[in-house]
Length: 372
Image (cartoon, rainbow, N blue to C red; front, side):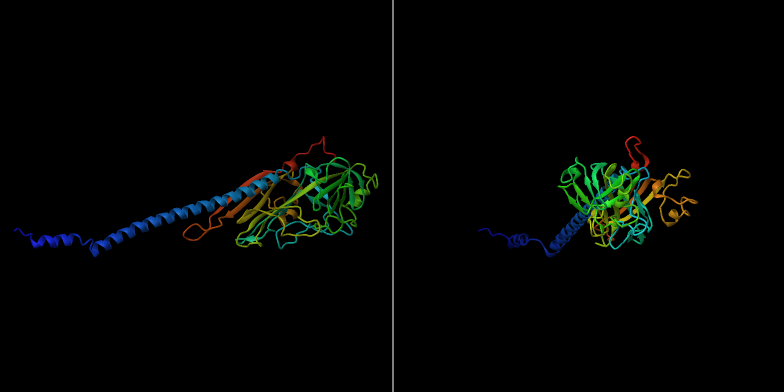
C-alpha cells in the first residue's frame, strides 16, 4: 500500500487559509487612498461646477440689469419740450415735488424749483455698500402710445380726453398713478392721475397725490395755471401726453446681505408715497455709479458727477454751474458679487460692467412736428 506524505495535507490547508492580516491591511490602505483621491477629485469638480454656476448667475444678473438701464436711457427726454423740462407747482402755496428713491429716503426737489428736468441725478444718494455711497438716477420720457392727445374739457382738477384713444383698455389705457404732461402753447404742467372715469373719458388729478404734483392752490405750474392761459377756461389748443418717470437705485434695506438693483416706474401708488415699491431687476449688486457728459457750448465737460459743487458752479463746469439740461450722455458702472462663495477662502467673486449711452431725446428735436 502506498501512503501520501503528511506534508502535502498541511500545504493544502495553508493554501486555503486566504489573505493574511498584513495583506488585508495593505489592500485596505490602497483602496482607501484610491477612494480618497477619487472623492477629492469629485469634490474639486463639484466645487468648480458651483463656481461656474455662481459666476454665470452673477454675470447674467449684471447683463440683465445693464440691458434695462441702457434701453431706458435711450428714450430719456423724448417727446418732451425742447428744453427737456416740464413745469411743476411753484410759487405761493407750493410744496416740493417728491422724487422716488431707495427705502428709508425722502428725496424731494429743491424748494422753489419751477420745473422738473428729464434727468435727475442723485450722486451719493443711494445706500452705502462696501463702504461706498451708491448713486440714484430718475429720468423722464414721453410714452409714445399716448402722445399729444387732444382734450375736450379742462378744469382745475380734471380733463376730458377727446374722442379717439381707448383709455379703458389696450396700449392707451389710463390708470391711477400714471403721470401726464398737459400743455397749452409754451406752458406745461406735470400731474398724476388719481381717478379715471372711462365712460366720461375724464381723468382726475386730485390734490394729495403721492408725488405732490397735483397742487391746485399753487400760484403757478399747475393745471389751473394752464387753464388760465388764453383762451381762458378752454380746452382749445390744450393737449395731454403720458410721461414715464423711471428711477434706478440700489435697495440694501430689504435684504442687507444681498443688495438689489431696483427699477421703479413713477411712484407705484397714486396716493401713498412708497419707497419700498419698484421691481428688483438684478440681485447682489454692490455698486451703481452714474457720470454725465455735458454740452455747455464751452468746455463740454465729461464724466461729471453732478454733485453740489458742480451745480453751484465751483466744480466741473466752473466758473458756471452745471445744468441737468446740458446732459447728453451717461456713463454707467454696475458692479455685482456672486451669491455663493465658491473658493476655499469662502469669498465671493466680483465683476463689473461699464457702458456709455447717449440721450438721443436730449440731443434731437423734430422742429416740424414738435408744437412747443
